[in-house]
Amino acid sequence: MKKITKEAILETLEKVTDPEIPVLSIVDMGLIRDIQLTENQIEVVITPTYSGCPAMNVIEIEILATLQMNGFENVKVTTVLSPAWTTDWLTERGRQQLLEYGIAPPARGTVDKHVLFQEDRVVACPQCNSINTKMISQFGSTACKAMYKCNDCLEPFDYFKCI
Image (tube, rainbow, N blue to C red; front, side, top):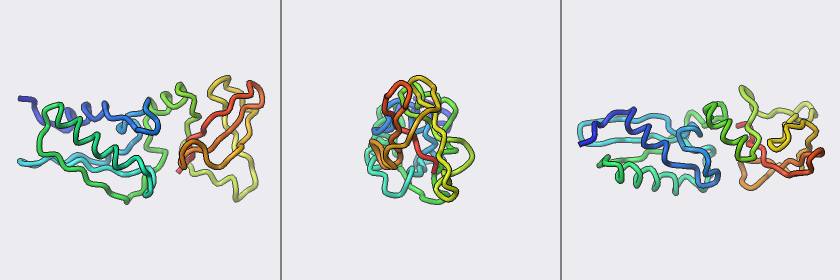
């Protein structure tokens, strides 16, 4: 029988990916807030990227299925909204995976306040690394991304918004 530890559960949860960005595990996304072990139950506590994220139901189902397929029984998933998720919870590996996938990772340590100061955010193109880019839409392929275009290589790309 598999030893039930938080580390073993977390390692197994690395197999669960974000359905909207399949190169990112939910661990690298920073969605796993806690793992509680009792004598009779495993509780995985998650925080959505935002409260209306449509992927959270799929993620919860995938957590339950993946843990059960890997020998972990009696699993419960609890969603908490506080503290609110922030892009600062993305791991370095997750940021690199976003970049390699063609999505510009969010800037660290701040939410995007450029609108308050009328400054354009500098976002490097994940294809050619040029900073000669322009936002063409506040919303990209999902609500948590903005759509940009590189003026040098002319490729469009998503930018993962700072939250």
